Amino acid sequence: MEKSNVFGFLNVYKPSGLTSHDVVAKLRRVTKIKQIGHTGTLDPFATGVLPICIGKSTRLIEYLNDDKQYIAKIQFGKDTDTYDLEGKVTHVYDKKIKKDELISTLKSFEGEIIQKPPIYSALKVNGKKLYDYARAGQNVEIKSRKVYISRIELKSFDEGMQTADVLIDCSKGTYIRSIAYDLGQNLGCGAYLSALERTKAGPFIIDNSINLDNFSSADIVKMHLINPLDVMDLPVVNLSESDRMKVQHGMSIEIKNLNHLWDIVFLIYSGKIYAIGKVEQNKILVKKLFEVL
Image (cartoon, rainbow, N blue to C red; front, side, top):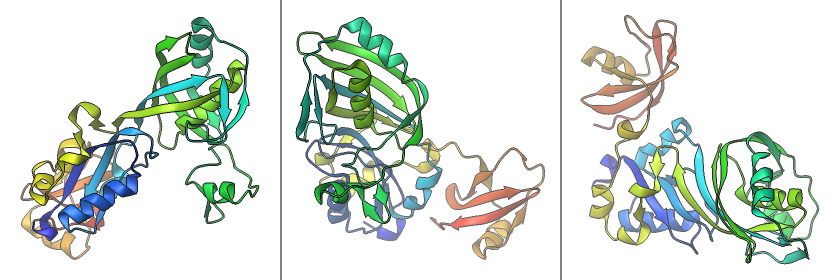
């Protein structure tokens, strides 16, 4: 595999039991490429869509639509210190909930909500990950944050087992474990996340994902590479040869009839992404140069 020419995304299905870094590490071994990253961590017990960026496409991560969709299995009746099945049980409740009560409470999570990230998370406070504080038994102030839940609906409920499958469409940075915990507190019965599958991450959907085990060779990885132009909705500006030379040297270019509603654009040469540009009045300034030719 020509390392310098490998540029694109993979829609990987992450199995349970692996960290997101484990997935990246495997693909680095298979491809012999160091420049590989993912667009959003999944907890080890979680499964589902994990978009992977190969080569210089890692520099596109900040421009990807990053809304997420999950199917969360929630167990009611207990709290755990991690808000999921891997933690220690901290409280057991006698209360049993009904389906109607659950549906009504779920509605209160729609729209913009304030949530506190779990203490067992990789979020950093003062340069240290929260789970390091937790494991050391140290207290730390965890600031609440605003997140947006565009849809949350009950898919199934087992009243006997007190478990529910809940579909959640949410913004980047939403902790599904915190939703499970907060839901249990609001219902007065406790709850934790017992399973989680990510079904969508930006433009990547589970129906098109490929199991990590299938990526057994560099050729297979290359065969499944997704062209960023096929999944990103940034406007496109095709470069002439003279403009390409200017872009190559970091110079701004002027484009006639430039759409002033545009902000960030793909600069295309020979059908491939040459650079990322920022629109300012009648000019496009070079933000990132790729030279993927």
